[in-house]
Every structure is written in C-alpha cells, then in structure tokens.
Length: 428
Image 1 (cartoon, one colour):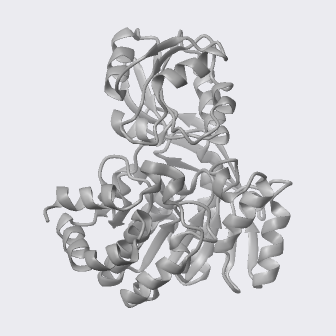
Image 2 (tube, rainbow, N blue to C red; image 1 turned 180 degrees about the horizontal axis):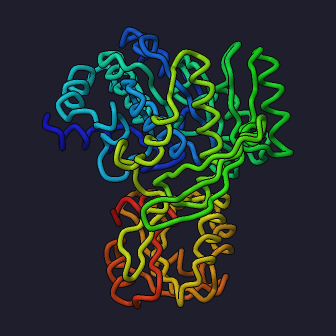
C-alpha cells in the first residue's frame, strides 16, 4: 500500500467516530487492551502526561509540548482530531510521524486489525504508542479522544493527569449532567498521582475530589495557584499578567495563541509545568517564556482563533460546543466590526439549537456542509437557523461558502469560519 491507500483503509474500512459518529463508539477497553498486548505494551516504555477535558485540552497539550521541547526534552505529542493531515495526531518535537512508518505499521498489523474489528481510534492509539516507544522520548503528552475512563489512551501510566474543564459535549456517551460527564473524565486519575483541574465548578469539583480521595491522588485546582489576565494583543501574540496566588508574585509573559479562552488554559499549563518540575523535569524560566511565545512554530498548532488574513480580517476557530462558542462569540463581539460574515457548519449528532441561540442576528450567514458523513445538511441547518432569525444562504461546499464570504466582506468587516472542526479543516 502507498500512503493514500493506507489512509483509505484507516478512514473507510474501520469505524471512525469523527466521520460516522455514535456507531463507532465502544463502551469498554477490552479491544485496546488486546491490541496493546499484541504490540507488546508499548505504552509502558515512555513517561507521559495525560490530558482530558471538554475544551482546552489541545491548547494545553501544545503549550506543554512547546515548553518541554524548548527545555531540551525529546517530546512526543498525541492529539486528535487532525485538521489537514492524519499525521498531525502523532508528533515528536513538532515533527509528524513519517508516512513510511504509518504505511509499514498498517501493512504489518492489518490482518490483526481486521480480525479484531478494531476502531479507527484504537488502531491510531496503537500506532502512536508503538512509534513513541521506538523513538524513546523523554516525555509524551497524550490527549484523550473523548471522555477519559473508557478512552483508549487511558492505559498509560502518567506522571500527572490534567482535566481542563467540563462542559456539555458528547452527552450521548458521557452523560446528561456536568457531574456525570466529570465522572467519565475523572477516570484518568491514577493511583497516588497528582491531578490538575483547570477550572472549578460547583457541580464537578466534588466529583474530582472524591475520585482523588479514592485513588489517594493529590488534587490541585489551577485557579488556586495562578491568575492570568490578558493585557495586550496583536495579530500574532497576546501578553498576559501572571499572578502567583501563593506568593503574590507578578510577572508578564507572551504567548502566540490569541483566543480569550487561553487565559484558563494558560493557568492550567503553568501549574502543570510546576508539577513536572517536582517530578524530575527541570524547566527554566527562559525555556518557559520562549516555549509559550513560539507554540505554533514549535508544534504546528492550528485552528484556535487562527487569523488567516487581515483585510478583511478572517478568523477560524474549532470551538463546537456551547462553552467554547460562547467565549469565541463574545470575543468577536468585542471587536466592534461593522459586520460579521459567518461561514457556518455543524455535525448532525449535536443538539444545535443551544448553539444557534448564541449567534448574533445581525450577522450574514453562509451555511455549509463539511465533506464527512456526520455533517449536517445545509437545508436542515438553514431551516433551524431561521428559528433564531439568522439569515443567510446555503452553499454546496465549505470552500464555496468561504469564498463567497471573502468576496462579500468589506475591509472593515470580519469573516469567521467555524461551528465544526471539519469546517475549519476544509478552510485551512
């Protein structure tokens, strides 16, 4: 097989949640355990940081990877989903896994995958863990795909665990209350290990505390240690005032991620870096500052409040649930643009009424459908949007919608593309 044929096998022949949704979900880890046993348990051969959460886990993962790389550690990074190339999911020091490795791995183990009827995510976890074990990184940053307790990544032995926040997403699998969702995410907390919680919430804090007590784990809430406030921003970076709450020390640092939601993610990352120092990974202040200032360059991170052009200003963001979109739309509103053009698409297994209610009625909407089976049809989206007085037109592809928005927008207006990770992927 060549690389294209290998991807066809991964995407088409194996169930892939990102493409088909609920039918690909498995409610136990037995298949992953069988796979990792077959691969001689590669996850036992590298140290890891494990990250779960509804929003922000990708940003925190890339912040940590950039800082650790800058500090001289060989750093592995596993994230999902990808935007442009499958190999974005699996990186060492910001460089994606080679095509040849992907091809050889699938060819070597294809018969086993088919016999065991492994899912796309299970197979990808096996690929990533095998590659990392061979590459012998100093540390691996591992992001969960969905949930935590039953996520295929939850078979690693991590140095610390991080849960960024809890919101209403994937409720069909994780539960209909914040407490139920938190219980699934809390499944990544390991015995006698430190766990960092990015945001406190009345409904979820007790869930995490109880799980930590059960596991004899030390629980740390990021907002008890750091307060981060954005004080300046350009098209390329944002400056933050950092207050260490235990000592009342203040400092400033610059990061190249621009979304307002990065305030909470930065607090979480700073506490994680502090904890990594305590478990034997020294990181200098210089490495911290340089790593945070160059996240996109060092890790090739994309899709979070990413500015694609300046006149008109074009922004894309992968926020796709109520909590994430609320912050994004609030930030757009603060920009006081003459008008905002929204290139908008969703997946069909979300309850999008709560999402559509967030969008401004004076925007111009370009409804589109990403090229995946899960994408919501544009006529359905347009009909639902009319209930919220969102006016616009449907387009047959993301690119047609995007090009129409660029053409119609004046220099003092904004084009925003989002609603779904897959809309952003096609725009990029």
